[in-house]
Length: 396
Image (cartoon, rainbow, N blue to C red; front, side, top):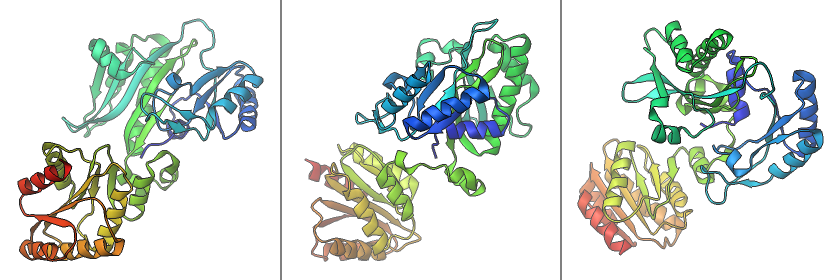
């Protein structure tokens, strides 16, 4: 589950990670009030107005701007709130901005020049261990740094049996070229950041940039946090942070009815039971010359009601030119699934895209008879290749 920057900072702050302080505003007046409150709290004279959307690259799209007085706070907040923000990580239509974070200016003058670093905490799936990835090249896309200057990216893997060790936090600070107060601050920052990652059951913490201020404080200026959906039952407060306005409406609807659905850009709708079979089915579609329009796992109870809900979700996508249903009858019998497909088809009336059904497993032969004798415009298949050939034929 993705959350907004200000929510990610709330989590970080609760674990003792120093953050750039800010207040959320939903309109220009609230932004001015927030700026006044921040000035009293922090002494900041300038304010950074940051669009709160689930996408990176906000600054490149005009979603992060500096305001040097209250009039500029009001003007900039008024411009950003309500706009469709287009960034390298959004569609061409962009994402509508419903709120902004009015944040303190932390690039104030002092004895030293401020410096920016990149840092993230995530799981290394190859080794099965958490790792901290960091670089001196903060503020830049990490993909660009990896491509152009890979030697400037460091990683620190953590042994799950002992957790992050002090020498590892110190090594990170050393590799970032820090010394003195900044060195000590960074070791504390890294330790608190890793604790926040583990205890919040997060899938990703990405802080870009981590800032060394002119007076050697270390703080998170940005926060991209992805929480593990499977652990939200342990974190009721975090679950309430979900902003469904930022999510695909079809995926939101699917979640409500208990279907695992991910929207994609292809032309062949998929209805499958089991994540592994769903992935194989998507490969099958590509080999047949099509592109999967979705990932949809109906689970082990593919009855008429569930199949009908799945049909309706798939058909919301106007790009769908065919639907491939691929069910392995182990827990659920194929004949029951076949009857569910026929009943759902009749309940919905005319479905004006070709449907190919492959049912394999318990009572697959009976299921094929049910489909073939239904009188509906549904094609049955037994083998994987047969299903692929029929998909290819209807797309031709």
